[in-house]
Image 1 (tube, rainbow, N blue to C red):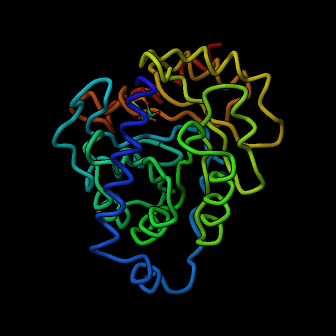
Image 2: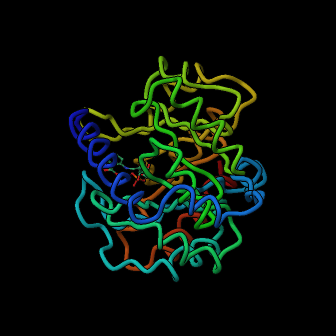
Amino acid sequence: MSKDILEEIIAHKRIEIAGQEKVVSAAFLEKQLGEPVPARSLKQALMASPTGIIAEFKRRSPSKGWIHRHADAAQIPLAYQQAGAAALSILTDEAYFGGTLKDIRTARPTVSLPILRKDFIISRYQLLQAKAVQADAVLLIASALTPQACLTLAKEAHALGLETLLEIHTEAELDYLNEYIDVVGVNNRHLGTFHTDASHSLRLAEALPRGIVKISESGISSPDTLLQLREAGFDGFLIGETFMKTDEPGEALSRFIADLLTTDYTD
Ligand SMILES: O=C(O)c1ccccc1NCC(=O)[C@H](O)[C@H](O)COP(=O)(O)O
């Protein structure tokens, strides 16, 4: 993704949110929510899980086009859970990723795992939407926000009972960390070229603060890579395309975990 495309996505998002707010106001959404319901904790799920895999539901991407055009949100998240995922990520951006908030609403009653709303969050309205469909955590992308906006959104997310995943790509973006961030993720996807390189996380690992749950995101396609990342201190691994490009993403995750366990024990 070029920086221009990130800017394009964010510009589109602003227009999209303004349109949505005209149809369903923030005040209406807030009223629907009632008392804050505690989220299923992504952080705790990652710490407790033997795999640490956050399995992603992703129909398309700006880098690859359609990956799994007719993916069913009533079937794949459940299959991921049955295969041994630690948590789920559901892309809700429609224009660039072919997802919708409805995908979380559909998946929620079928699974007990924490669900991350994966989107380009730039306003409190999107946090209300996330809560309304019973997501448990939201993504905050450093390169799409200022540190102050990140702090404000993370604080508001907590007030609504949502956990936060801060995504960084550079060491400098560690400045975005604040007391309301629950998990920090290193994105292996280069924002200028779309190139994904899991060793990017290995290079940044030393710079990450101790005592925070850490995940590595994007471009993870083998158990070997996951084990190297785990060795370097990562607790979680966000994986989408590796599973979604197959006909049966849940079975692909099952095979991945079986290979992971075999590799782990024979090391
Ligand atoms: O996937 C993309 O092409 C992409 C482009 C621009 C911004 C974000 C993008 N992906 C969102 C994600 O964070 C990934 O879906 C997630 O990290 C999983 O990555 P992968 O395992 O490589 O599908």
